[in-house]
Image (cartoon, rainbow, N blue to C red; front, side, top):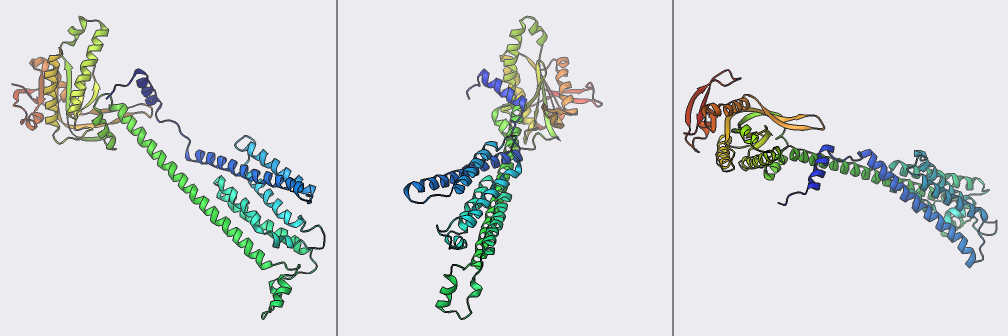
Length: 455
């Protein structure tokens, strides 16, 4: 695997210190999506109004039709309102009720056209003909466009305003008629002539048709609002999934930060795959404490820079040896280290893995000019992550850790490179034969400890 460059390592350290990258919460992200959708809706709405204005102005150049000046003014006003609304969306001037007001104004304008739009140049045709010649479908775009804003409330509002405006315009026109005919005026046993007399009359108001139109319009608005509501649910579900993924990524980074420099990548991957491996727990394990013999004399003969460089190289090699046997370096102790087996990485035979690693360390350390002393103990080990939200570390503690440290110190008195307790010796006898070195009272422990070493 290629080594990371200096800049990459610095960036990784900065990212770890910062923690997970800040992200907008679900509500903020949705509000941003709403604003973008509303901009799109207002843009499309304004394009339609401007197109209508262009058509109205252009038709006069190719026909003899002269548009009414009030129609042109109304379209100019609606176009200007659309441009202004688009400009203030998301600004400090934006208010939640503006989108409702603009939508209501658009629908009111369409409905008012059915009241005042001239059916012919003569004044002898009743205005009710406008409802029969054009129809409620002119209102549908103003029901559909609010869906782009992802606001189901705005869609329901648009449907309610459209039905109300449609019936208000219809009622106003009908109230000004001196004579009206509807489906109720057709007799039960109606003939073709009866239908022609009523349905083809200019006084036919078709009240039943208006009921059907408005019911279909409002039903479509409710269905569309339900679709938008479900889309919102999908959006928030996706946000929750992304948040869970981000939390998992942060957990992986934390495991990598805690162990990535101490153990091989394969072991880090195993820690990441086991979500409970860093949780506080007490379990059986084996502890190894290593210390370089006569390090003070070694350091006295060399420059500090040389000492640190050689020490770093040696400890990096030692950590790699321990990692190959699925041990984890918990901490470096100046010129030594503390490692554990079976915590947090689970092993079937931690004593054997630890002793095998110790043999490799003893052999390799001698070759590298660093004679070492190693103490090994087995038993219950408490482990888990400790620290604050910004800084955490994995630690181990308990009598087993203390016993391993005291055994390492005892090596100096016994003039031996390795000292292990009875439990470790019993469970790793298949690897090597150990010699009992007697029972020793170790500092900080109440009972004497049977100590074993290499013959």
